[in-house]
Each structure stands twice: as structure tokens, then as C-alpha cells.
Length: 170
Image 1 (tube, rainbow, N blue to C red):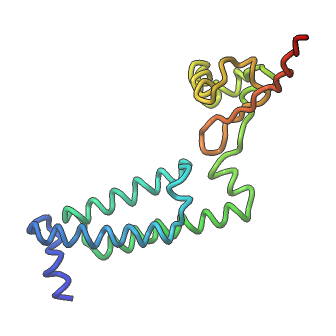
Image 2: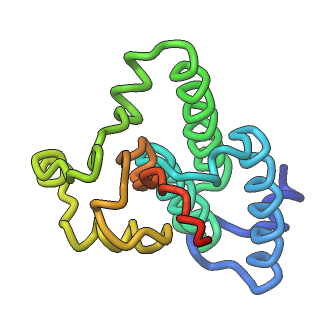
Image 3: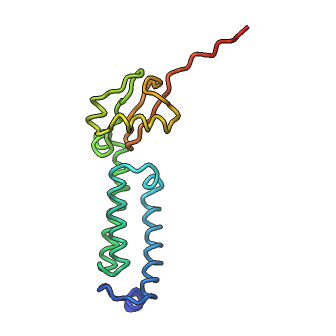
């Protein structure tokens, strides 16, 4: 244990450059282990819960890095958060009400070319934000949309209205 303490330095914020470098290597490896435990989904389409986990893990690791927190208790707390995230991910797969509470449900924001202004207001989405989201999908107007949903991850998905086939000229 003394060897480890000599390598990483004290937890009082007074480490040498070499000790900080050893901490950085150790925390990098620990971060890789946490990502492997949490799974790929943790860093794909971030839901609010994922963002909270990112913030907590990043904060814990940065405090360890600069010596503002004791190394091993902080690593244990970080690993606990990562494992809790993983368990909640499994639980939301198996129990719909928990998934709805943690991740929310998708909501219709446009149906048959009509924007649902009440849903947009409830979710804090301006018409300008909605139009921007449509433009990013290559859709120029709300009237061109058959169905648009505010998805669980906060993004807006849209399905264009079917286009009539072009008229053939004789």
C-alpha cells in the first residue's frame, strides 16, 4: 500500500508532476473499466440520466486527479454510480413504468402537417426550434410532415408526407 501511496502522492493536493501523471494513467484505466461496465449505450444517445452520470463521474475523477478527494473512497463512489446506471438501464428494459419515469415517453409534436402547439409549449420547444430540427432533416415546412415525435432522448424525429409520383409528360 505504501508503494501505491508513493506513486500517486498524498490526497491533500500536493503531488509532484510524476505523481499527477501516474494518477492520470490510473484514472484513464479506471475510466475505461467504467465505460466497459456501463456499456456502449452510456455514450451514445444521452438521456438526462446519462448526463447526470457523466457529470458525477467527471467531477469525481477530476477531484481525484488534483488531490481534492481521497483516491480509493472516491473510486468506490464512482464505480457505485456507474454500476447503478447499468442496473437502472437493465431495470428500464424490463419494467415499463420505470422507463417512462426515468426516460419519459415519446410525444407527438406534428401530426398530418399540424404542429401540436400545446405539446411544444409543455416541453419548452419553440416553433423556431421545431423548424430548425425539420430543416436539419431536409424538411422545409411543418405541412410536409406526416408525423414528428419528440423522442425519449430529446431529439425530434420526423416522417415526411408521402410525395405523389411525378407526372409523366407525353
